[in-house]
Length: 361
Ligand code: PLP
Ligand code: COI
Image 1 (cartoon, rainbow, N blue to C red):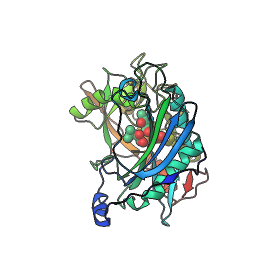
Image 2: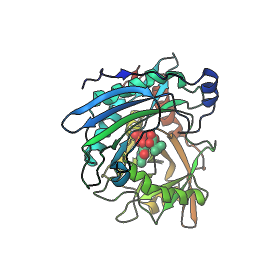
Image 3: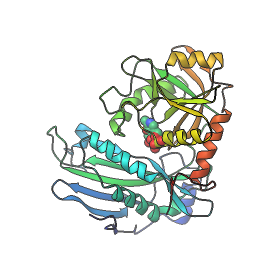
Image 4: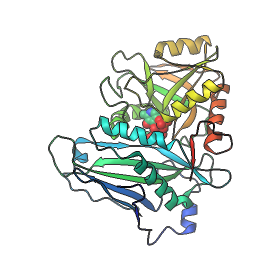
């Protein structure tokens, strides 16, 4: 099917202006949703069909729908920004479309033509641009996702899929206002093993991470850091963000994409921006003990996490077992702030975009 084959069913009773204004005045990440959604169906033998922009509403699922049993589900996360001149824009949407299909392949699901993914994202932003929140860090967070919709309990890749896009007005991911986050290193739980699904953006990875994240919160931290499953030694990533380490010799390090971590689009952008800033960027394994030793010796000056939702977030403190160490002065560092500003300025159209990352809508 072609990317312009969407039927449009506007919401018969869209949210009233005053109700919407109140809802987006201070949105908590992922709690508020817009009036519409995009829906496209896939059937083996027929391909993709029935592309619709329609009022957002509940899905009716047969109790034997495959996703409810075997978790064949993938998603993406990207933001639509309002540029300073008022236009809406997407950041690296092609990369999200490509990663979505990489996830689909790993989960033995149907691939969605990239132009259809991008068209679906454009449709939801066009339908719900009024929901853009005028708050610090404000954006329309877009959540494309796909689940196995076939009604069948046999363990096999489904023959039917349902792709949807929903939108959520968001402000900053971390509401605490603290200058840096505190991390808990999980020794008991790992997120992904070699040969597993760590590089795919499938719901199951997040399900597996929740108990460790819960432990981090219970111990008073913001996020969990996962170590590799084989040696429990190498830093992998957080539950929803990639990690970077900044050194006093003008270099930065991020864990390599060996199949167990998500290939973050923000991670990739940060590497490009850092190289342009004259930093040496290395994708290499970094051990948890080394992180502590380097933080204590001062060789490591900053650490930060990054992702679409969290943008660039400084790490101030790390705790493993009962021992903690502080990164730099425990707040945001100069390199982190500079890279964050460079990224955000491009995303918001305040700086030139030499990489072609921004799509104006
Ligand atoms: N790692 C995980 C596990 C994530 O869920 C995310 C968020 O999407 C990221 C890293 C960062 O990826 P991106 O920068 O593409 O949002
Ligand atoms: C994102 O940054 O888009 C994510 O998906 C992270 C998290 C909210 C799951």
